[in-house]
Length: 637
Image (cartoon, rainbow, N blue to C red):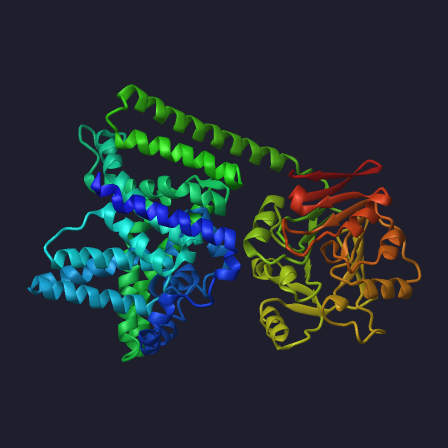
């Protein structure tokens, strides 16, 4: 019983901190810089040349490995693209995007046994491991999970120094108590919570899971033999962490990674090598930068392997199993994880028959969830009609609209208006729609919620329509895009063209209004005639710009579909909305966006016109098609 005193105390401390922070207001109590960063400020400054030299030595590394190696070695994730982050999350490999607590354990183990190998005394091994651990923490970006690992590793090493072997679960409880006393705000930090739960899962479930797999047979590979011990542990480690962490992960992403354990089996053995070889590069880089650039390829290989596995797994069918979101989903996952853990731990009060029943309940729920998720995916894909003309992608708080037309031979042609802020979300939408290339892409203006995902489509087009940049940052982005496509044109009122058999015209910006050429006021508004559907797209124009547009456009007809300006903000011209009198209004907007979009005034105006209102936050992907003499709207939800 004494073994559980520290863990139970840790749970009480954690819960108390969480309640106090929640009641008091987490944002107000959260400091700008935590105590760990302040404590490591001096050694971090001393090691800055090594970090900078490492970043320079690895700057030339390509592909996913080049993006991941800095995070695996220093914790710097600035090179990791949103697309790769999404793929790592889908593959349940997010913990390998940056330095985590596991890296601290690797450093301690490698240094301790290296010193033992050369014959150092125990005291010297312990001291050397503590010094190496301190330098490593100062070198990387300090995080809650790293702090947890440091305290636990320090406790174990101190226990060795005094001749007492520290027990895992009490040591974990002690680390939680110490860290929450120093940084109470970590009680609400997902990284800290996941680190603690993963460690708890490893300490309690690895052994029973290893024993459970002891009698497995893998077809004809191990006929008459038990599964090798190394493979059993390789399976048990990620499975233990997944069982313990899944309730928390549901709060971040309401889905279960179908191939998460498989991906971790492929990646975990090489992750430690990536970190250690990266540290070797960091040690050499300040002295011999040329040699470090060569050695960097050795660190790149395992990082590239991890990235390739993430990309491969994320593109497998049914990569995620849909799950309930919010507290309900977390609660159901918690119950299932608890039942599975109880069955694995074999408490005395549980008979083998009851244990088998618990296993069957968990497996049955997971099979039901997988079947329902597959059915939902098939149903959602089937909701997209073959003759769709306009699609509003669900990219969160942002705009991304796909226009489709056909030529005289029946071949499809596509155009894209904006990309949203996420490369992953726009990529998923285009994959669902079956779009592989665009005749042209329109970037209505340079706000991130309209162009943030542009890198996902640069290889899919050769022609861009944009507005002139208003500052240096926009200019740099334009220069970057110009180097990757053949043609970039500045759109202005009067421009027109075709997409297959359909036609389009630019309504705004108008060169007669020099004060409205940039930002929201200068964003590109267009009129489309697609397969008999007249659509107006007003980008992020404000009320003044919309009224001026109408004043400059003599013949502005009513439309079938209106892309509402600026996500339905209050700065919308209700007079223009009434003038266009749309049958269908499309609003690209994110759930709980914090801006109050779309506003009640805009919605009321549309309702008074009898307009059908379609919002991506409520309906997901929305597609519009013409069937016979009527316009039909299909939606995900």
